[in-house]
Length: 264
Image 1 (cartoon, rainbow, N blue to C red):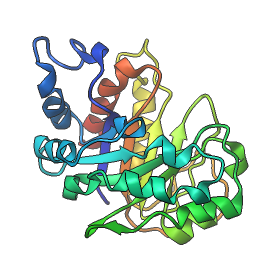
Image 2 (cartoon, helix red, strand yellow):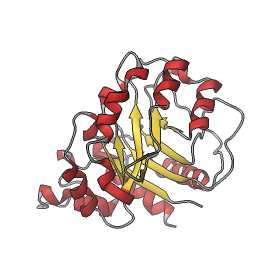
Image 3 (tube, helix red, strand yellow):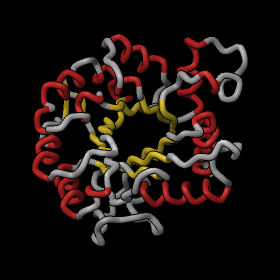
Image 4 (cartoon, one colour):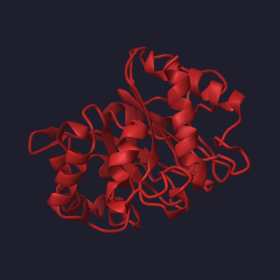
């Protein structure tokens, strides 16, 4: 079984102070605390703005060994009419210092608006703009699409050909697809409830723990929505699960509860 990493989106969120972060913890130590409470963090700030290389150096140095960051790509790369013309924006995004994370750099998340429809030639051209490495550091890519026009075998085949992961997003707002298309799995769980102390019921957390183990073992979990009947090759896959949801105050508790189940 490959590694399973469970995390949250970002680490700066005021409602986490006193619920996740201990009272009195100074803000500049929040990343230090969070990176020891969960096993991965999805850096979301990079979606809205760029950062200096030193920021990535600092984040890498703050997190412990074995910790991994995923990085959300700039909106200027994905929120455009012609994706094939995103080359300059992609290069600018990748040049800001992501490689400074070194072995703590996990997948890059390329998220598309819910209104973005599948245009095969244009999307294929976009995927071909995504490099496999930068300055000697391997790059892995995951795409989150949120329009049901992507739910076709052609899209799944396109991702598998390029070893790009289709993000499995468990959401109440748009359809999900669980087809495994890369040598890793990337899932975003977006259905936590604020009236649940751990975001999800104990039974739901048990089910997600079992699903994560199946992904990591190279299996295809039952009960999830698939576009194609042909499963991916059965090989162990590093698995990333992020608690990203409207009930954000519960995200750390949900992640920690899932980590606890996976440890037993």
